[in-house]
Image (cartoon, rainbow, N blue to C red):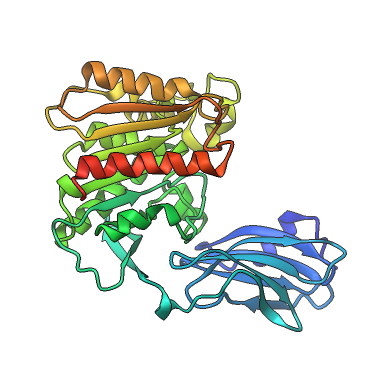
Length: 377
């Protein structure tokens, strides 16, 4: 009999290989269910508590499983399916009926105005880095295509395909969205995470650079039309790009960013991140952390991207003084002619705002900033 409350047993049973990641596990009356990501694809697996037999459920075309909810007294689970192409769906997953949509409208891929693809870039050490590219159907890509590159690459988190209504104007004006699945994330399993963790964190930055330069080599965009966005732990990448590769980007936006890495573990709750970032009391870790501290590595450069830092005043995970220090020092010492701005929401916390209206206003400001700096009309 499988103990459905024992995640250690669940993970041992469900991990298919080192390139897989268990995203979430839920117990139901008829067994144990889990979302598993492998090679950028997701499946729901069900383990029968009596026979130990594993049954796989695959998502509808073009979608991915992104969440799962079960209850011990209910047969089956409810899953969330998301896609770059259409709004979120909710479905029942049960052994007898398979997958049945219960909320939302299932949209055929051929009926959407968008399309997406997977491409790969060779990083500094020869490792191939996957990236998602989302664009309007029929849109020809060229050297003047505006690009919003994103990369998070931390905590083994998996970048999930999701529909983004806020990007409609960007896409309609010829822009594309690119997600670089750099090492440090969990898209290709536990080893992918470790390869961008602690002393390997520089790989996350160099992988993102590789994805950016790969597009340039393919004749897609140029530094005047390239922007980068990330937030929270992804602020490490964003800050490093501003300091180390200012020649690649016209604009960088950082939301609630980890920009003062060497000071992080000394704030309340900061020590909980040592396993991910490293320990400043360890000489080897400290050397890497100092090299990636955005605040401590600012130097004057005649070529520097425009920078917008956004932050919630009540952020308890990444304190607002990290963004404030970065912006103040860039304004004083960064050089260049492009603007360095900070947007503060005094009602918000770590990426959370009080209303959907606030979030819409935030993204309206971000895209307005990007269109201004990339001259998107």
